[in-house]
Each structure stands twice: as C-alpha cells, then as structure tokens.
Length: 93
Image (cartoon, rainbow, N blue to C red; front, side):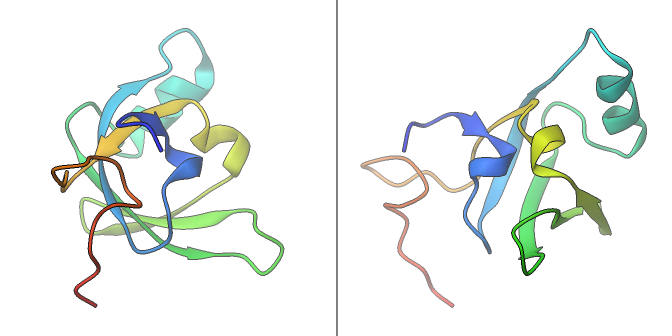
C-alpha cells in the first residue's frame, strides 16, 4: 500500500492522520463539522457485517462513515515503519 491512501482503505485497528478532506462539496463541509480536519488522527475500529459503514474514532468520538464518503478523505499511516505503509507495521496488539 502506498504511503497515502483514502480512509476507506485503512485496515481495521490502524490509526491514520488526515491529510486532506474534499473541499468542493457539502460532504466535505459535513465531514469537517464532525471533526475530520487536516492533521487529526483517526482510527478504523469496526466494520459492519456487510462491510459498510465502518466505525472510526475521531477526537474521542465514534463516527459511522460510509465507504463512499470515506473515499473522499486522504490519509497517511500515523506510525510509518522504515518500509512505509500500513501493512508493514508490526502489530503490538
């Protein structure tokens, strides 16, 4: 996985840092109102049985975000290993 990806591509249990939220739509405004802004840490905690939506922890709040909406949020791994990306991070859990 690349160093940057969209929020819907973040593996369960992994934390990411928001790089960019879509600007040109009502969706972008709504996401920012929910606390999803550039630089904030966000963690994908759970996923619905059929895969959509997912539950994310942001600023101490749990938010359900549809995958189609999460695809408009650009993120990077919060903890970047030497090789980079999410799949190369050793899990301590």
